[in-house]
Every structure is written in C-alpha cells, then in structure tokens.
Image 1 (cartoon, rainbow, N blue to C red):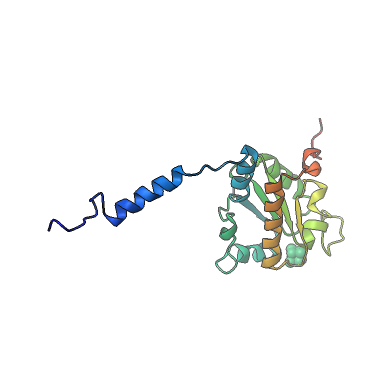
Image 2 (image 1 turned 180 degrees about the vertical axis):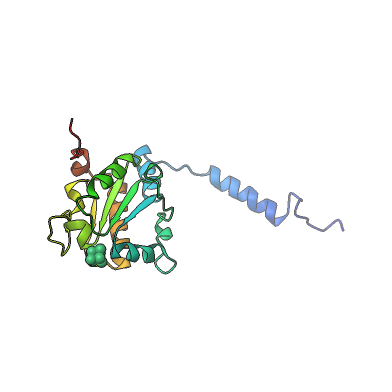
Length: 187
Ligand code: SF4
C-alpha cells in the first residue's frame, strides 16, 4: 500500500508532467510585435456578413457547409447584423436600387472591415449590361478581394478568404479603403 503512487502523490506521473510543463514554460519567452499579434488574431477571427442576392449566395452556403467548412479558417461566425460583422461577402447581382442599402450596411459594420466580392455579378455586373444593375459593387464600396467565376467554386472563395488573411497579416496598405467616400453622401 505504501508503494502505491496515487494521482495526488508528488511523485505521480501526472504531477511530474505538470511540474515539467511548468519548468518548460519558464525556460523560454515568446516575443512578438503588438501589431503582428493583433493582425494574427484579426485574420483568424473574421465574422462574415453574407450579402447574398442571387445564385452566388447559394454557392456561398456550400462554402459555409461541412464539406468546405469556412470554420477551418476561423470565419464561421456568420452574422446578419452589420454591427457584429467585419467581413462583407457580396455574393450576387446588385441592382442600382439596392446599392444605397449595401452602402448603409457597409457603413454600419465594425472597423477594421473588409469586403470580398464573390462572382462576376458582384464584381462587374456580370452579363447584366443593363441600366438597372450596378456594374460592380466597387462602384459604391471599397472591395479588397475579387473572386472570379459564375459562380465561383467554393475553393475559389476559400482562396479569396486566404488572400484576404494574407493581406491582414502583412498589414498591406489599402488606399481604396482609406480614400473611400460614401457616394450617396450629399455633404
Ligand atoms: S455571377 Fe453567375 S452565379 Fe453569381 S449571381 Fe451572377 S449569374 Fe449568378
């Protein structure tokens, strides 16, 4: 009985493991820059707002689903309130009538915020060369990443998100965002 090593004993494997983990953690120090660790957190915790208006919106659903699983990139917390989102996913045709609403949503989002334009319609109006369709959402909001296709494959959308993550982690300048003005602002 006296030879038994219990989990509460100081010589138990569990206790020794904890002890060595403590010693190990005291043997080194991690250094980084504040902006680098903030960017690391930011790129791995994007909260997307899906602005799906047409078929690309359906394709976007499969990006979120279990097969492609955007959660692997830390961007699964989809929010339908702009005040809780920092990544606007524009997926589908934007009509001229809808454009001011898109701008209002963009303005209500949290800073720092990012925009990914998914598909031909969102990026350029697609095949709708018509008076009522906006010829690209970058006519009214600043777009960081364009994903081509009609519709883009889920892999292409994931690639777009990864490009955005690289942009965030390297702190790439975004003059299109810095110089953006609300086109509907009368002041
Ligand atoms: S780009 Fe193609 S798939 Fe996407 S909304 Fe336009 S027509 Fe639909």
